[in-house]
Image (cartoon, rainbow, N blue to C red; front, side):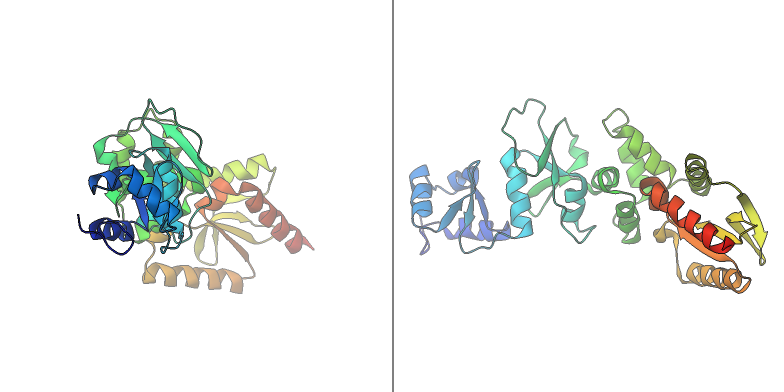
Length: 297
């Protein structure tokens, strides 16, 4: 067996460098590296023992990807990274989340892993992919579960980047209608369907009702445009923005002309997203109350 200067097969080192500096005990065995050789590499300071029979090349930094790979493999060699962290691994979002959700086999009885929520469930092959040597949930499921964990913005971002389609997510949901997050996924998909605007308006009315905001009218005509909601006495308009993936340059210009016309007609215009309505209803109510009070002053 040919060894490099660190006493390991070059092919194993190449594999580790392709996988964020990580070597598992199983990979070491596959390359004819015995437990004794592993122990000598650790003692020599060439490898770092990360626990759970996972090792890192000492000359490879512990990057965000390295930490994520270690966290996933620490649960089980067959574990599957999911949720917001999977969306990050797929490149949907740019900032690494602080915690991870990892799927383990139903019979898993391992120890807890810091920063990891372990979910025991079976996953169909169609819902699992290997990306850069790590098992992760396939993009449609990753995006849906990331939206449940972290909000609607991740769905909008994935659609904008053309990484997934609404049809992909609908098909994926069809395989998970009885799962833990099924109700939340269904709600998300409602906001992507043909009745999306009506659903957004319903959410806005729910915010008004919960926070006892009165004096509004829906579909109010002003300055040549139909407003989603208006408080005519104070000339405050509330507009619900659609998903960004629907927008193009023409839509952007139309929205800009609409907003300018309303402002020139002495209207105060407030714009909110679906994420605001779903995840930050208190913020929405506070902004409306402030605008109404300011207009009345």
